[in-house]
Image (cartoon, rainbow, N blue to C red; front, side, top):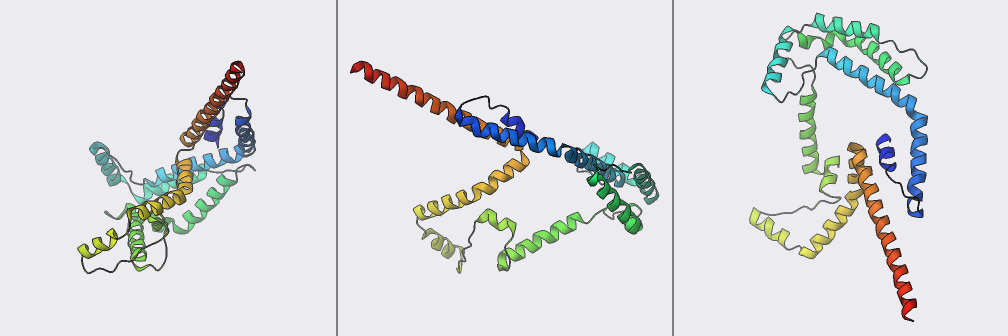
Length: 251
């Protein structure tokens, strides 16, 4: 929302074409002012969550060889007692009590509950060489296998299928040559038509994805398009007035 407001502040025109954007900026500013305390609480909770992750010493994804070697050296000196001590010290420091801190209070309650129930089971990975600290890679592998099985069986649609379209075509062919011959039977104009319909159907989802990952850049692009369109309309209006004046002079 702050990125959208920052982009909307670049609209300086006072004409009627920018009236909607000025009203939108007022709404965005109102929402930001109303939720600023909640956003600050959520930001603080996220910072505490990063400290929790640092206490657990999750292995990073280094890109350089020296960073990778430093990570391996740190893992050699880690132990369950060291991690437990760091985590318990952090839990003693993390005591949100304010009324305007619901996110931090929820994080604190969840942390204490899970640490009290599963602390011993979570710390085995620091004493057993080669045991990963999480099963994310294994779950990722299972997820890819599950999605592949669903895709080839047609039992259930997945989000990945949306990238390929809203429909699937089943070909029955004995070899690749036969498959190519069947595909080539589709007229090029028909393919282009349905490809355009697919792009139009995917456009809203792609727009919201860009807005989510780069709100400022997406909003600035929209504002730039609006400014260019507004300048074009103003130029057309000037040309129309000049044309009308020239017509009067000739008569």
